[in-house]
Image 1 (tube, rainbow, N blue to C red):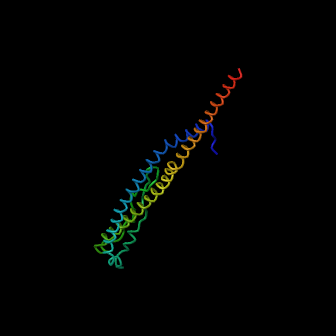
Image 2: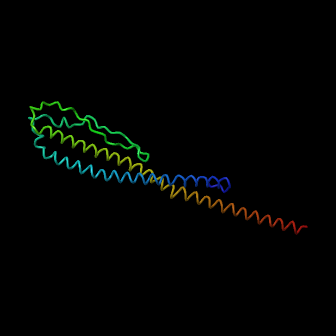
Length: 198
């Protein structure tokens, strides 16, 4: 319940001042996050196109990959570890792709067809392209989640907290103004009565 006092008026004015000071920071963060989401969306389009291109090239090799007389090329294209690091962008820890670590090739070159190295290289390119897409999608999800949360806060400030504080200040000022007018009127009446009594 709103108290209609001078102390409450000061409290509401302080609160409004803090809200109005904090809102531009939130709006800036929201704009930065929106920019980053748009950038990662564009990056994803490029990365998906690269993955599709490499995948199509690998599919041209697919009959050769089924050849049992060669080494197990899929074994050498299976990632041992995907290295990534995290960076803070607009207050969000997002993953950044570093590299994919593969097994060392230890097959005997003279026992394998000439195209084996190229096939393994293409398979690895496809895995790297896939991992780049996966990490970019993870990055986009993290940014979108933070963007939703910041948007909710911006809306809360713009549509609820600031208008409510302004309305409370207005109510308190009207009440205090009415009280002051009533006090002045009572003082005039009392003064008039004193004059008439003398």
